[in-house]
Image (cartoon, rainbow, N blue to C red; front, top):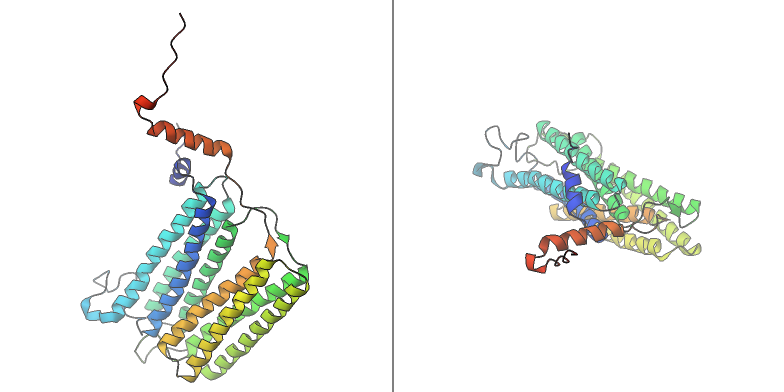
Length: 341
């Protein structure tokens, strides 16, 4: 009985994406992960968290929102629909990574990791609705989205480099300083979710939405303290990289992080002193994704795995020859030599 090929293997035999295409597909997953975070924030800020009062359908009788539900139902359902778009983009990355020769299992595993995080977060989103926007579940929903963004950024980086053993580009203490920066930024993100869970934007107009029973201003001050820690670590890392004459890529990444931190700091102070306006809070959430991406890029830029593996020439030649044979007309086929008499 002949072996049955799975669909990904069949695609890999017929399609050879370039390394650049795979890298762009990985970048698309990063962009979609950012969009999911921002649109999720829009659901909360427009008080549309219960725009669809149940899950997985929008109402008990309808999959989609009804006209009576107004803009809140549209916003909530639109965020759910974006999950499908995200799955398509992640699926494209998985297929492209699998079809590329030589096969890189590390890339396909990262793609599947993204897929399962999306599926898990969809379930957590449903639990969020069914529990009436429990703030702890809402926080875990955001943190899972941040986890998805993390894996997407790693996928993007790995798609543009080889599979060699990681080689440090700077001394180990410098890499440890960068890792401390990652940890501090992760703590900043977690504290930010607590600020959200105890703040005034509950996600729904109902006064019955439970909030985290903490003093919002005290948690906000802790959040600001960690901002100063992250900025201080970034400055220290910048001077350290200059002192050790690190390659240009990580030093440029730190400068890009400074720009993100400046943007985020201005937005943070504007929202704090102006009563948390919805648009500014949304920009602050967008800024948080940029800061996290910037920190991860610094950490990943401090090691090297060599160039992207090139596709085998035999595979490329066989594909080109097969294409030429399939597209040639009978008149273009080479004439057979006459048989010897």
